[in-house]
Image (tube, rainbow over all chains, first blue to last red; front, side, top):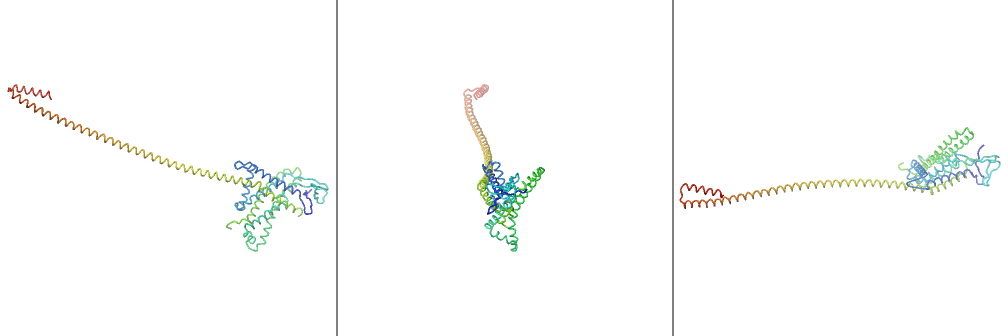
Length: 251
Length: 163
């Protein structure tokens, strides 16, 4: 049976409780992890978690250094860190387990009616990666793309405006398509990878006991995919911001 | 699309990520960056001070080398000078001794000469006195040839014992 999202219908739209819960859980985990890492900050004798966090900082610094010029891309270090932490933790959270409730005829959560798609029997999935939802990945993608456009317009106006007409003015439509395609590919790539991973997990779960080795293998692979996708998202964010807002000398 | 794209999720995610970003920046990344910057500073300072210490050590070594060189040269000079003064003094002493000896020798020679002259002079005086005495005795006594020779022998003997 297909798992439904626990959605509450309001006049102004649908409220996806699972998404909200997962956004909260991911954010809290990310924040708590970061806070624990900086709890006992030390210059000379950093703790394990601090070391790890500093490694992440170096890692993101390298990403920025590869994508653009680190000196000028430095202001985006916090953004890159927040992105890679949030996406990686989000990707990982959906892997280990799921939390499903069954409902017969009627279901409520804190007094709110859950939308049951007109069915009598429904199963609600409360636990998933926040990044396995296109609306959430698109939110992240649009945020960074809009940011890149704003920063490009603010700091690099001449080149930012000119790049729509390059190499020749009649390339404008192609450049506009590229502008639209960037956030779409950025968001949907992440969504597709993680969503596919979770679909695959539920398919393997459907196989029963036989599927356990396959499940182990696939979860291991999903960890890999989740890490790669977090890296790719952050990398592309920095590339886009760099393209738009940091004009390299001598080109 | 309704199933795939949820505007509420979209908006909530944007807001949530914004808040997460702000919180992380303020409470986690800022102190972390501060610490990392501090460490960078510390490493830089330590490298600088090590570099400075090395330069100092090199400078001191150079100074010491020069001082040693100087001391060696001075010692050499002093020894050389001492040797020179020593040999000069020895020469002086030898020269002075030689002069002194010469002087003494000459003095002695002079003394000998004068004594000899004195002796000769006094001998001459005595001889002349004796010859006068002999002559007067001969004249006084009127003696024969035999006694005369005895007499001469006697006086010559006297002269021999007296001289």
